[in-house]
Length: 384
Image (cartoon, rainbow, N blue to C red; front, side, top):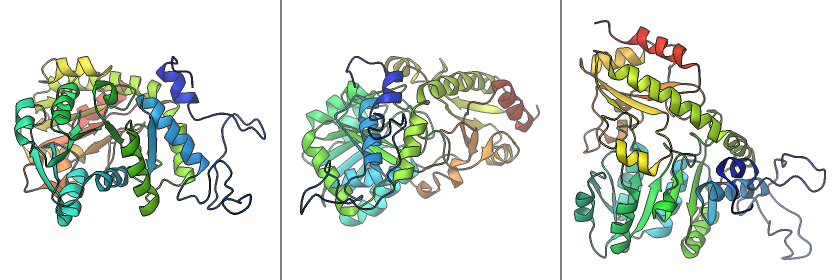
């Protein structure tokens, strides 16, 4: 790909050269486990066995790197598989991780329960407070500074550039989970991050029909270490999953435009409703991270959370009373979803500093007609 090509062009063409044999515009799905060798060790294009490499996965990995403006991309079977491979590549027993107090519950569970059992320590901190982050870092021991912005589910905005500077001065690798924003709205590597992680299940795939994860890494040595874990442990994306993700990415930019405009209208509607206590959406001027989000993002995204004045009962009733907003885990698809974090996506952090208040609801705003979505919300909100 030419380096001067813009995002929309890259999303459609990077890693997507037409098939040289037939001229097919869309590269085929390489549904194969192994590859014929031209004599012992004579690998065609480097392919030997599909755990180590597959042309369809390669096309996705090339595309992921191009989207984030990075050197290397890696594709995995899930977002957590991507996170786990990176953590294994970087950490050893006794090392320390600093992460936000409002990260995805599965990320905290992976670091606390799985890697914690092997001696990895962690500290959760208010990531929007730069001074608090600096104080949480243990010199010589903190190896990863893990940033999620916007955060899940309270939509906190963290200053990537400032935190990257703090992390690098401490010798830590700075990782940004860019799932909520997507590379269409935010590119953390340009702000100083070392690694970008995605649940490609979400906005990149975009159609709720495939599970996957991805990493984009600039450092050659870190890439080789992580790629070795990918090969040795085998958490790779399957060919059809990679192909579906590529297909989704082709429309990422136009989808994100609609997600953003719909979410902005819905956030403004919810903010005016008497039953709603707080609307967590960085596109609202009242959001504490609004100005920072406007600086480091090109749009405010399709994710909204809200809290109810009447507590958990009102929140639960709301979640179970809509039709277009379907009650389900996950996010980022073309259809709208509603989630009750306290007992769904963040159930694993109950009783910890990351516990989500039980009056909070999370919305993944889809690309349906916004008038229909607002009508659905209005029918489920408590009557004043």
